[in-house]
Image (tube, rainbow, N blue to C red; front, side, top):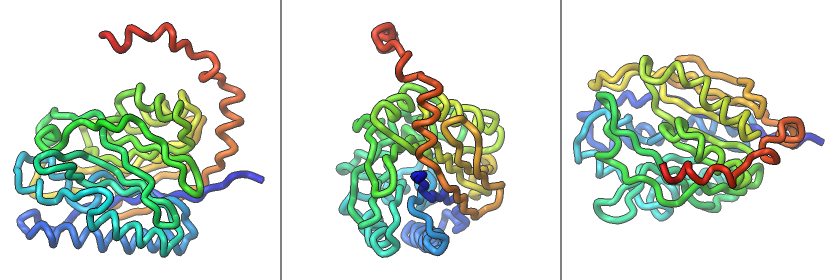
Length: 289
């Protein structure tokens, strides 16, 4: 019998004016996502991944210390606790990207991973932090991750997380495969004219090279007043052959759902023996350059 896992990606837009109180901005987005997660539950989804920094706009479009106040501890912060309760209620595993405060003045771009019984499994901290192009000022907000490339064994699948800019680096994608990931989720915030031509190239390439499924999530719509471009959505799932099997359009709010047959991983890896034929002893110079 096939190991079918029904998964979902949620893409949406923060439409609350940024001049509003941060608590209001956050609450509106949390409520919107809860409604969409509950919609997923009605469709028998087992694993859901939310977009990067899901409860806020993409505030790295500017450099303003005001946004530090959106950060939370993980796992004791209110959003992680809320999502644990929701996961348990819906019997659904959740990947929840949160602006994390480790200690006063030290912040990370993080995703908490919660199992279907509400258990907090751990977190991934974004390793590669961009500070490039007008409107992607992430080093102002985030310290580079320090937890490596963990894989989390949920009730339904072994899950890895890679966040947005990480996807441009094949090394971490390979590490997730070597660590046992069956599905890698990449919550992102990417705009038209920035990296849209790469969006459907890099992540299917990771899927092919590593023989796993990828769920690529991207925001959608304009987040005013910033003028960094329109987040183009187009969230999708691709299989270990690099084939896109389910895809959103550019709608502001949309859920992408796909049945992932995890037995395909075995089939593809038996055909393409990339893990057998890799030569790590010849790659030492990669860490010296």
